[in-house]
Image 1 (cartoon, rainbow, N blue to C red):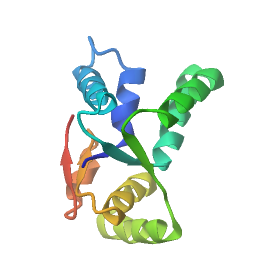
Image 2: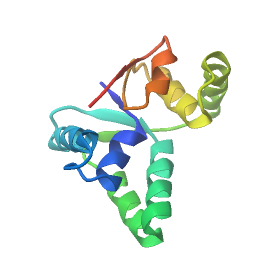
Image 3: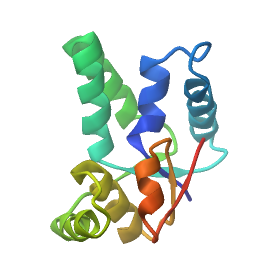
Image 4: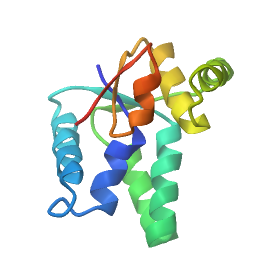
Length: 135
């Protein structure tokens, strides 16, 4: 039961897989999720991150389209972010010096008993409570 970091969703959108191999691996993983090979989880925060990046790079209409697609992505469950999540994120940020968003991702995963985060972001490697794997 993996937790999907926003980078897995962003890479195939902003990079060409022929140029950036990681984009292709992310795309393959997303196909596996969509096909039902396995169910994956991410925070509602991911919607914000993905649509914000697309908006900055491609404009509001593209970001709205991507946001709509993300909300209906098969077998990717969006997990809520509550006050308890943010409180835990604060502790994680203080302990590991992670960015606020990365801390929210870790807290969301831990709050939902998910110990594996799929990401290319090596900042997660410092967090002892989770294991980061690449797509």
